[in-house]
Image 1 (cartoon, rainbow, N blue to C red):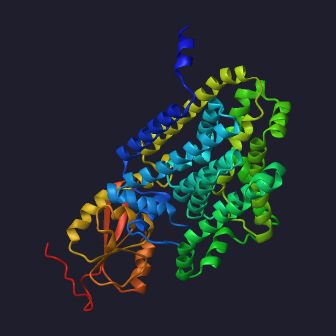
Image 2 (cartoon, helix red, strand yellow; image 1 turned 180 degrees about the vertical axis):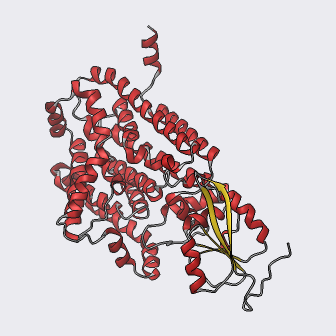
Image 3 (cartoon, helix red, strand yellow; image 1 turned 90 degrees about the horizontal axis):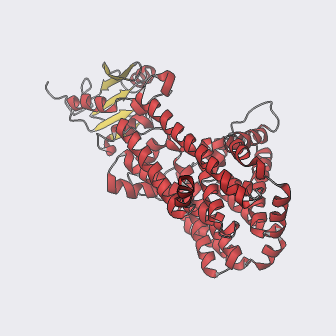
Length: 487
């Protein structure tokens, strides 16, 4: 009786999904901020970019993520909380649109839509990798989910307002990440491949949506081209020019698809093998055009990626580049299930396993943060004592410029020093301090810029002592007008 009451209280709907997402977000954010406010991985570069609002920050990534981050930096300041708020806003929006899209595909079956959406927590690249870094990735997940929902709305009602949503989603996708056009192309080809959809889509409105999405995003591309090396930079980023291995890009695509789905498929098959039916899937595929559509999107994404990597020699392809192309996989998997009553019963086991996985991920994250030794936390960027370094830098005030060697040092010191004072890379600015953790970098700086006196500083600990070199450029040369203050 108690078990039945608990089952009745648990609702497979959007409110429950939202509650789970908020709980997950709060727990991880509290855990992360309690141990460290350090910027790591992609967050460091994005935080520095978002100090100012621009059409183009880099030739390698569109600016949507930084635009939203700029807004949250106005609310929370130059703080990791702004990055977390940006990331989880995009991921929450993506979850919302995946849920709504799945409801359309499965004729308002909220249980299947609920399970399809939560399934993404089983993907290593989302359930773990997105806890740190993955900035533009979260933006493209949102934009692709929004686009998928908008197209399914067009399929369902073909109303002009749905095309407006499609226009907005396409614009956000183009501004999110360069992988989005592949997803968009797969959607268009899928619509063309299904006769009924091909005949019912208002193609004038469809291509008007594409035109306006490109028109609205054109200022970014114009600015990016003016930055220089745009097309060459994009090509070089995607191609490592691996020698002596044929079809290396295609092989990486195959490996990426296998690794991406490796955590999800065994759990799905293990939970639902009793109700998997090929006849049911064939029936769904033949009778439900929306099911046929999402299956074709998944297949065409793979074919476009595989053929494109082979034809153009793209071989710098990793699993994290595949996020938008896997958005329909859980939905496509659930079409194989027969016997709705059995699915309902087995879904509790499925949810339990998802819960265990999430708890395990957060537990590992706690250990990584709580045990800052390199055998456990790798590079341990979360626990580098930048706050201790900033205290030492106070002794050298005033200085006009702080020259650092990498984006991580620049972003994390910007929490304590005005970001406009920090310069990354070699510079001969006057009234400056040079700070680096790399002895060779400082030695090269001294040889190439000026022969200056270097003071070895050592602050804090992260499994081994965290050490920095500090070179004081304010004294020892007549070209510098800023004098070192008296001790």
